[in-house]
Structure formats: C-alpha cells, structure tokens
Image (cartoon, rainbow, N blue to C red; front, side, top):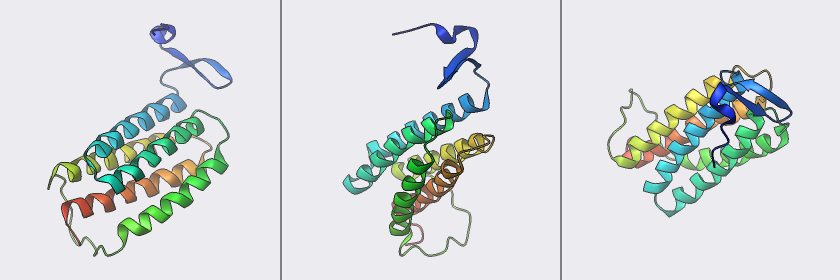
Length: 159
C-alpha cells in the first residue's frame, strides 16, 4: 500500500512528524535495513545452525532500527550485545590470526557474509552520527566482527 507521504522528501519518526529524509536517523534506519537485507541473503545460503543465528540477528536488527529511530531501546540493545558476544566467541573459536588481507569470494556464502559485513560497517558509520544509542553502536561493531569470523569459517581461511 503506497501512502505517498514520502513523495515530498519527508517522513515521520516516533514522536516527530515531517522529518527530512536526509536526517541522520532516517539515514541510519536505511543503512540498518540494507544490512538486514544482506544478512537475509546470507541466511538463504547458510546451513541450519548459521541460518538460525542469522535469523535471530535479523530480529535484533529490527530493535536496532527502533533504537536508531529515537526509541529508548538501550536495555534491549545491551541484551542483544550479550547474545552476540556469545555468538562471536563461538564463531571465533579455533580461528588462527588472519595474518594478511582477506579477499571475499572463496565461495558464495563467504562472499555474502563479507558483503553483509560491509553493509553492517556502513550502518555503523551512519549510526555514529546519532547522539545516543551507545548499545547500538557497540552491537554493530561486534556484528561486523561476527560476520567476518563466519566468513572466514565459510571460506576455510584460518581454520
């Protein structure tokens, strides 16, 4: 259903109407949406265990977008950071130091995971402009590390 509300270059945020689409919060929400879409592409190519983790991360990205839009979801983002930290430790277990720059593309899942990592980095940069959301910024930084570890596992690099 098209509402045509955004046709004039403005949209709404929670508690704020008529926000320009180049507002930092709108840019951050768009970057988070792009990152979640890239994670969805990874999920489509992943095995069952990784697929389940990526689905949970996509759900956490909805919370991340709510935080970026200005809602006070700090406690939820901090809880998501705890879950992601556990995932990162598991994904990194047994990986040797990279020792060299890693180029994406060893296989389809590796390439998708690296693409998602780059999208998450872009979202992190967009969210850096927000005056709040410390938990969100920490989450995105950790998420890019998690995706990097999973990409290394998918490519067999450093195992």
